[in-house]
Length: 436
Image (cartoon, rainbow, N blue to C red; front, side, top):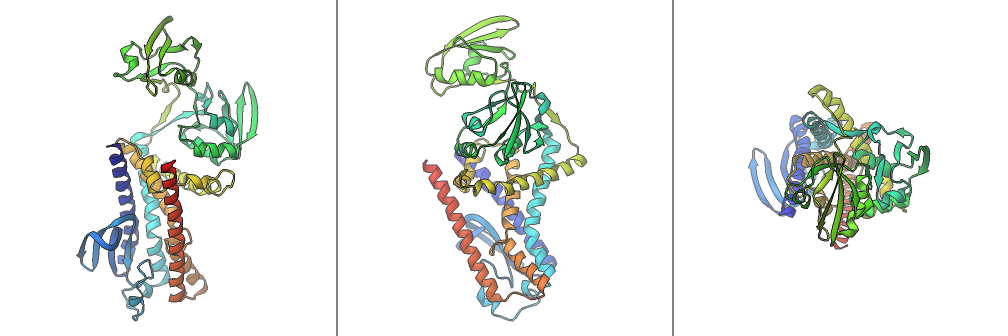
């Protein structure tokens, strides 16, 4: 059932993005009087799951869920319709229109993707606000995994800056900043310590299947109890402080998790402090089992509220920030030591990223992020992508010379081979990681 929910969320997200992207091409084409012959969600190789002609356009759903397309009359695209291109140009064809109109048609899809992400991020800020931990609230510093230690961090560090940029708030963005950064400055045992962020550590983080490699260190106070858990059955209460696990001292929540893991599969003894009184709870816990408690993180968090007008620039800044990080991540992908290319995810890997329960917040956050990613990928100057068409149009506008149809056809074929090759690599990565 969980896999079904993950696949459903992924298909719905991709469907929204593809339809709106292609609508970004369709709408300006119709404004400029260009005939649009087909509008398809997914590819209809050999046959379509559904199709219906309305006016002069055939709308449909293909069976191959790798994207979608609009077939614009008089345009050399993935359909490679040479028969149509061999006929004299008609006034309602793409090739008959001025270069500036053709350029607007080609950048329409990317524009819609960016606008969609902006709208989603702005709307989410209005509804949910922005919850984070101010740097000043990081009184306990951070907890790090073994991968975080390879990066150069230690438990209890207080991050002051990444690449010279002061840390003002701690959120998931910090993890990206660290992975994309070159150096960090931390407060360690009362002294400022600077160090390069290790490429070996980045490689270890990207290969790890564990949770965040660093997170805000939390106190030992219980902030949440599952009502059906072992903890609830044994009388744990919110506000209790965990001071010992099997007689070993606990000061921070990370220590509790570390000490609990090795004793699972036997009897665990947990000492609690409640209003100055010490209580000891002993009970069996299965291997891989959970006590059913979470730390009190609310003492660290703050929430910024946004109105409609204040959310607009904040949503735009978020969109640009996501785009910037996506561009910068290529230095991890192409770094021979980090070997980030091994972790590039295709459809299978992306499905695994989806929430196993239907979570609208996660769904729309993913959709916004992926919309930015589609905009970036599509504007790359590779023939067969929107950016390839834009590249030829800009050449025409600058030089006043239109590339020959033969050049455009060859470019389309080369671009198609490049795109298919990349897709094979990505799918191969997915399958390899699945087997691993």
